[in-house]
Each structure stands twice: as C-alpha cells, then as structure tokens.
Image (cartoon, rainbow, N blue to C red):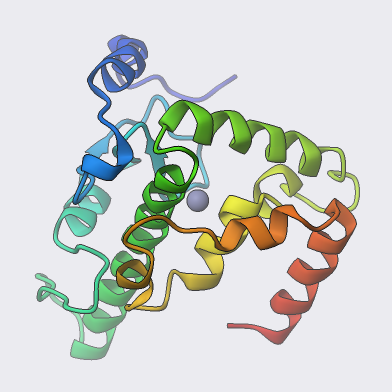
Length: 190
Ligand SMILES: [Zn+2]
C-alpha cells in the first residue's frame, strides 16, 4: 500500500474509540474527528462507535457545525452565497447520514457491537456481488441504503428518535433485489 501514514500512533485511536464508546441511545450528537489513517480514501466520513471519523479538519469542522437537523448554521468562507449554501447542505446531509447510523445502532439492541456485526454480515452478502456491482458490500448494505435514501430529508432524524428501522425493509430483500432497487434509484437520480 502506497498510502501515506500521517500518524502511525493513529492505530491506537481505534482502541480509544471502542473503549470510550457509550450506548447509542445516550448520544444526542456525535463529534467529528480527523483520522487520515483509518479513513479509506474516497469516503467522506465514517461512524465508528459514536465518533464520526473524517479525512480532514475542514470536513470535521463542517460536520461539527451542523446537527443534521432542519436548522443550519451559517457557513464561513468566500464563494457565492449559492455555493456556500450548497456546501452547508451537503455537510448537513453527510452529518445526517452518519446520525442515521447512530439511530440504526439504537435499533439493533442499542449496541454498537450488534450493529457492526450485522453491518459486516450484510457487507459480506453484498461483497459476493462485487463482479456485477462496484463497491457492492457498501452500496447494497441495508444500513447504507437507508442512510443514502434519507440523508437529504431534514426531518428524518426527528422521525426516528427511538431508532431507525428502514434498513429492515432492505435486509428482507435478496441481494439481487437490493441491487435492482439500487440501480433503479440511481438511474432516476436524486
Ligand atoms: Zn454510511
């Protein structure tokens, strides 16, 4: 692997995150932190035991400035108002995406371990389809399908305060059915 390791000690962060993890239902928000070691290139953010891992400070600051709810704080910096508004909207959507994973963890027995165990199981189901669908373990994962579907809905987090269960509908489908659904929403566009 040619990737630059910016902080070799970052390997210990994983233990710290897991050690300090609290039950999903006790978290009103998740802090965004920078960890270029753990975050795979090409991903914007990753929820890990109650912490949102991001690849840059700018990304972390944007995520920490929003709750993913319907109210937004103002973005700093230059650019046109429309461009700034778009950046804020995207940051809020990304934050909401990660917060949906928190709500899903509430719905899997309020346990991060159970959530990740199920996540891994679904990831492996999708991974078997990797020849037909790039990044299938991720894209055809019911948890991701729910998060992508609702990340632009400002009311979604309020509606699933006690746990997000939309993933169950996708989990009940076969992987082929999930793939067909994914393709149909993709071609329709957002
Ligand atoms: Zn996700």
